[in-house]
Image (cartoon, rainbow, N blue to C red; front, side):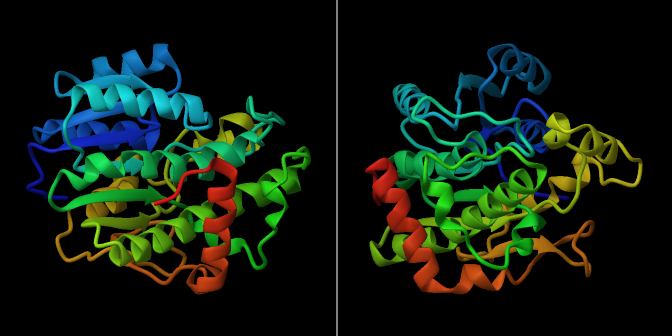
Length: 290
């Protein structure tokens, strides 16, 4: 995919492997400065060696508000602006685990971290013309038919495979709802930043690392390569015709593979009252608002 994107400062979360690393290699090769925002220091440094001189590794655990605070401060000391934030980090079918504040790990990583990091970096995004926030979601977002708000309850336990699958689907829907609602609120406040969501279809990554069967599926030769999978991320980051609020998917019936195109989201994401409820509950959780 051709793009003239260059001389931009780009943050990519979860960029030590899979789609995040592939995106980082692509953007760095075009002459952009790529910030590798990864939780694991060893893997982050390894990713920097792979991506090369146009990259910088800054540790970030998106499941931790404290880590996000530190990351935002460190980035702010080094850079006066931000052109593109790509929220890509995610986990799937994670073993039962709570964060330090008692939040379920998948919920914290896959959704809450997207919200908190994005709002923390808005001041830097404002300093750059045509800046964007890209929220990477999944076709799993289509599977949710009714929202279970209990995930905001820190007492709720996630242990069965059914619960792990459901929270993965919910968090991907929440990312999408957040992305659409964020765009509306940016417009209302006259903030010139675009919020765009996308999904990569079904591509090779390390998402299935916590479940044996998923690891086998992700290893199948019929799966799209990471190079194919990043098409929607690159499209969302570079296409000048996008005005914000779109959901970029793929131009095939099941959207497992294909070329990037604007698609309809899960109908739940288009219900404004649900998006507003999600926003309100997240603000109450973190105490940060736009």
